[in-house]
Image 1 (cartoon, chains in turn red, cyan):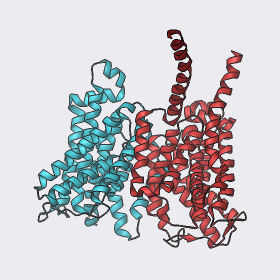
Image 2: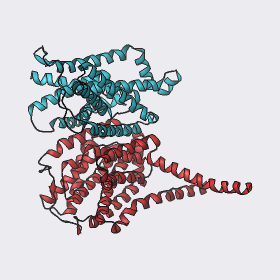
Image 3: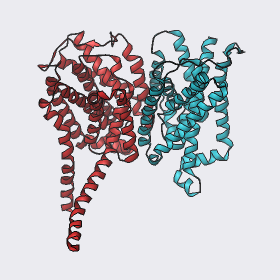
Image 4: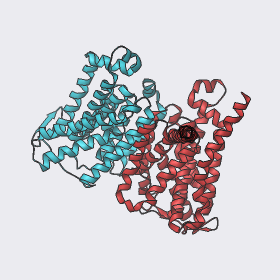
Length: 336
Length: 282
């Protein structure tokens, strides 16, 4: 029994290692990549940031949100305005952007105290539409429809006009956020969140504040989205309302749902893929728009457990083959 | 005021029709069909092609449009049927189907606006001071007739009894000999047809493009949610209320995007009285 208990976590760690390496490789190799390659890596980082918060919100807190891209927009515009119009240094403006997204998230976080599941999906979708068609057209938030150009040209001393340089601070912050999120999932707070998602009454009976846990989950996801938005405006230099369509929110939610409720890494993989693919394969033109939905359909139909399930099946198939080969050799040897 | 009221009723009837389809699918399968609007949009374009380009009679073109939407609704379910036990997987699946339908429509018809001549254009009727053109009256009448029909159907028919039984406990219903899959297919087909009805009715009233039903579907979702996602007649009522609120606000200001801000108002409603929907949803 004790041996089994010792073996299981070790095997889990072993199975996660390739995923962690796969996620880290683009950042570690960024100095070898071209300017365009680094642009792709920055987009992957932005996708991973959104997925980090959304994974915690969806799989740990049990809340569905289609408003993350709208919150990303709030983060982007607050960052841009703080820097461009009020002269706030870029690193501090990013913090303001995150705070703006957290404040905006309360508009959906507070109803979420009473609503959950699919009903919450509708409310957050309504919020996303209201943001893209009304909030982002308000002159007090976005004075120019063409976008707000940043004042500063450097972020922590790195030139923001060069992806090759920008990838360093963005990559490091993304790795830190992913590590914090992963740690959060393992912590007592993460377990409390899961209990709240599983059974609110039991959670309340054990002394957990259901409301504050839900709001904290929304705030954390919003802070991640705000950070992603801030990085988006920094990487592009100027960003307008059209950069935050509702369809993107659907894509990120799909990525996280496809990632499944297990470790965060599959969600990150899917989000990084969805973010990088349109940039990397822009030569495909508008056909790029249908590849995402078709990929989602393929995974939904082929694997009910999402990417986790696909990984498990792939691992199972490979292991079976590995075990089958010696057996075949043995039988071959006897026959000859 | 009368203009606001008549506009609100017509818009609200459309929202109600969309909400009716969403409610039916949710009630039977426990799934939010995010492809509902796009299924209707495809029907509207078939209606346009047959009516404007092929010069077929209005009724024939409309029937073909509604039938197309019904078939697409059915196909959506059949495509995702293996995952019906998992509403989240179904939800993502419907989002993906919506993306594929939007892409396909964009490939065939492009992003331009299309126009269909309104039916019964020379008819004008007045009810209690409210003046309706023929096409608007058609929308209102169809909405009320369909909602009334479904209300009576759900109270009286054996099919509705089987529907409720399989929605309540599919496993027990299956043990009792109810063909749950067949009922699912019928429900998704009927919901698709309702989306088609809404699209075909609204298309002549406005210039439409490949996204027009997506925006209508969001209002439909809001109306369905206000009605608790399980109240068939209430869905139409909530749609009408939403339409009236939107018409009033739109009339009073020309600020762009204000109708969408009404949706934010709904969020406030849920802040104040979330239990109106939630308890019935649970």
